[in-house]
Length: 124
Image (cartoon, rainbow, N blue to C red; front, side):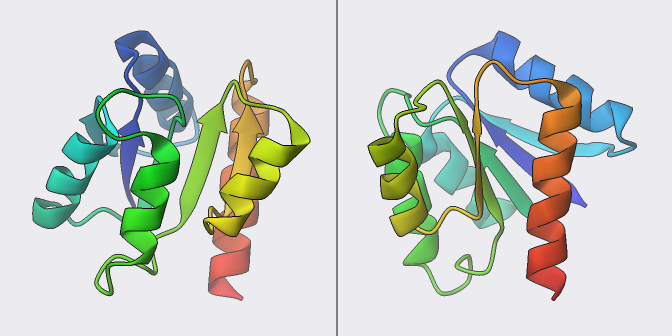
Protein backbone atom coordinates (compact mmCIF):
# COMPACT_ATOMS: atom_id res chain seq x y z
CA UNK A 1 0.00 0.00 0.00
CA UNK A 2 1.38 3.41 -0.95
CA UNK A 3 0.91 6.28 1.51
CA UNK A 4 0.95 10.00 0.77
CA UNK A 5 2.26 11.83 3.85
CA UNK A 6 1.41 15.54 3.77
CA UNK A 7 2.89 17.96 6.31
CA UNK A 8 4.78 21.23 6.01
CA UNK A 9 7.22 19.96 8.64
CA UNK A 10 9.86 17.59 7.19
CA UNK A 11 10.47 16.33 10.74
CA UNK A 12 6.81 15.40 11.19
CA UNK A 13 6.74 13.66 7.78
CA UNK A 14 9.80 11.66 8.90
CA UNK A 15 8.13 10.71 12.21
CA UNK A 16 5.02 9.44 10.37
CA UNK A 17 7.07 7.58 7.75
CA UNK A 18 9.29 5.98 10.40
CA UNK A 19 6.16 4.83 12.24
CA UNK A 20 4.73 3.40 8.99
CA UNK A 21 8.03 1.59 8.33
CA UNK A 22 7.86 0.07 11.82
CA UNK A 23 4.44 -1.39 10.85
CA UNK A 24 5.94 -2.95 7.72
CA UNK A 25 4.85 -0.37 5.12
CA UNK A 26 7.49 0.53 2.55
CA UNK A 27 5.91 2.78 -0.11
CA UNK A 28 5.60 6.51 0.54
CA UNK A 29 5.20 9.78 -1.29
CA UNK A 30 5.72 13.08 0.56
CA UNK A 31 4.25 16.53 0.09
CA UNK A 32 4.83 19.79 2.00
CA UNK A 33 1.34 21.25 1.46
CA UNK A 34 -2.08 20.39 0.05
CA UNK A 35 -1.38 21.74 -3.44
CA UNK A 36 1.79 19.66 -3.76
CA UNK A 37 -0.20 16.67 -2.49
CA UNK A 38 -2.90 17.14 -5.15
CA UNK A 39 -0.20 17.35 -7.82
CA UNK A 40 1.35 14.09 -6.57
CA UNK A 41 -2.06 12.38 -6.47
CA UNK A 42 -2.36 13.08 -10.19
CA UNK A 43 0.77 11.08 -10.99
CA UNK A 44 1.09 8.49 -8.23
CA UNK A 45 -0.95 5.41 -7.36
CA UNK A 46 -1.52 6.46 -3.75
CA UNK A 47 -3.86 4.31 -1.67
CA UNK A 48 -3.95 6.19 1.66
CA UNK A 49 -3.50 9.88 2.58
CA UNK A 50 -2.16 11.06 5.94
CA UNK A 51 -2.35 14.84 6.17
CA UNK A 52 -1.71 17.66 8.59
CA UNK A 53 -4.33 20.42 8.83
CA UNK A 54 -2.23 23.56 9.30
CA UNK A 55 -0.10 24.09 6.18
CA UNK A 56 0.64 26.99 3.83
CA UNK A 57 -0.75 27.32 0.29
CA UNK A 58 -3.48 24.67 0.76
CA UNK A 59 -4.29 23.30 4.21
CA UNK A 60 -5.36 19.75 5.04
CA UNK A 61 -9.04 20.57 5.26
CA UNK A 62 -8.94 22.15 1.78
CA UNK A 63 -6.99 19.13 0.54
CA UNK A 64 -9.59 16.77 1.97
CA UNK A 65 -12.42 18.70 0.28
CA UNK A 66 -10.51 18.70 -3.03
CA UNK A 67 -9.94 14.94 -2.83
CA UNK A 68 -13.59 14.24 -1.95
CA UNK A 69 -14.81 16.39 -4.85
CA UNK A 70 -12.60 14.62 -7.43
CA UNK A 71 -14.29 11.46 -8.68
CA UNK A 72 -11.04 9.56 -9.32
CA UNK A 73 -9.75 10.33 -5.80
CA UNK A 74 -12.90 10.45 -3.67
CA UNK A 75 -12.49 6.83 -2.51
CA UNK A 76 -9.08 7.44 -0.88
CA UNK A 77 -8.91 6.92 2.88
CA UNK A 78 -7.77 10.11 4.64
CA UNK A 79 -6.31 10.29 8.14
CA UNK A 80 -5.82 13.79 9.53
CA UNK A 81 -2.93 14.17 11.97
CA UNK A 82 -2.95 17.63 13.56
CA UNK A 83 -2.46 19.72 16.68
CA UNK A 84 -6.06 20.92 16.34
CA UNK A 85 -7.85 18.99 19.07
CA UNK A 86 -10.90 21.14 19.74
CA UNK A 87 -14.24 19.39 19.34
CA UNK A 88 -15.41 21.85 16.65
CA UNK A 89 -12.20 21.20 14.65
CA UNK A 90 -12.78 17.45 14.76
CA UNK A 91 -16.42 17.92 13.72
CA UNK A 92 -15.35 20.20 10.85
CA UNK A 93 -12.82 17.62 9.64
CA UNK A 94 -15.38 14.80 9.84
CA UNK A 95 -17.88 16.91 7.89
CA UNK A 96 -15.21 17.28 5.20
CA UNK A 97 -15.15 13.45 5.21
CA UNK A 98 -11.80 12.56 6.72
CA UNK A 99 -11.92 8.90 7.70
CA UNK A 100 -10.22 9.40 11.06
CA UNK A 101 -8.40 11.98 13.15
CA UNK A 102 -5.25 11.93 15.31
CA UNK A 103 -4.19 14.78 17.60
CA UNK A 104 -0.46 15.51 17.87
CA UNK A 105 1.56 14.47 19.73
CA UNK A 106 0.77 10.81 19.15
CA UNK A 107 2.48 7.47 19.64
CA UNK A 108 3.21 5.08 16.76
CA UNK A 109 0.70 2.68 18.36
CA UNK A 110 -2.09 5.27 18.18
CA UNK A 111 -1.22 5.96 14.53
CA UNK A 112 -1.34 2.23 13.76
CA UNK A 113 -4.70 1.82 15.53
CA UNK A 114 -6.22 4.73 13.58
CA UNK A 115 -4.88 3.44 10.23
CA UNK A 116 -6.13 -0.08 11.00
CA UNK A 117 -9.55 1.30 11.97
CA UNK A 118 -9.79 3.22 8.70
CA UNK A 119 -8.71 0.21 6.64
CA UNK A 120 -11.17 -2.06 8.41
CA UNK A 121 -13.99 0.43 7.76
CA UNK A 122 -13.02 0.87 4.11
CA UNK A 123 -12.91 -2.91 3.53
CA UNK A 124 -16.24 -3.49 5.27
